[in-house]
Image 1 (cartoon, rainbow, N blue to C red):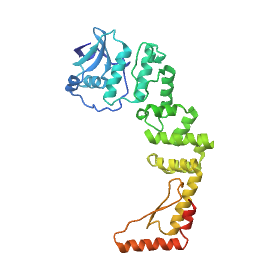
Image 2 (tube, rainbow, N blue to C red):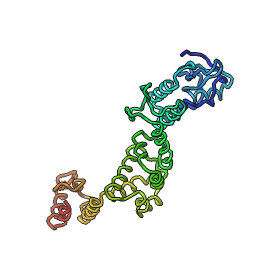
Image 3 (cartoon, rainbow, N blue to C red):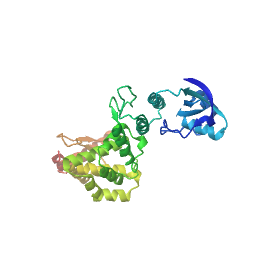
Image 4 (cartoon, helix red, strand yellow):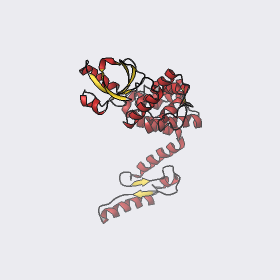
Length: 318
């Protein structure tokens, strides 16, 4: 490996073997100092032709503003191990916090196909895997399936914002299920805990209640939600409905509870709290007062409701 100023017209921009999707594109304008502080990586293919290993964006900016110029580069020899160069690039991008799981998988698939690998890492290479993947050996078929699954989900998520665990969860779905999810979550851009909690609820409905995604799509309340709310407002409504389907008895109790509290007339005066799952046999009455007189009035009002029997139904729900 050596450092050199390489003529831009000697760099083969069509060779994208090492290309990785950018998680963020913070570099928008050309600054010659960029290439001095962070030189692009090139692989020497012939004495006058170079392949980009790292620095595609910097190269294209330099080419746009100084098309006949040269650029500082870290140059690797032609006989360098392709897989090791790729691993170094991936590690660099990870340190820069500019590598999505999807970009890693897409780059890995391209490299495996180029080298004829059926598994990564293979016996001759310790490999570099993202921390969330751990020590799992990734086969060519597995990587292709993960990418295909992600591409089926573009209607409801930014696939480059998904982690490995989320992609793996989605990969357990059939193609028809992914199509159903795309309809249910259309344009909602779900990711992280919001996505995994929704998928978990849907799985629980399928396993415990034999409610399939096709049934969920036909649910009248969910249909109304999809028709009435813009994508960014649907999450809370859809999750609330799925929870109702998942815990019908609990949600029936909650409905009775809210109705009973309103009938007491204390809902704007006292915060009456119960165990989230109605598993305790007591209630908590929480209120605030600025003076002793105000406190006395509040206590008197609660006592009156208790003596008249209006609080009895609340206790009967426990």
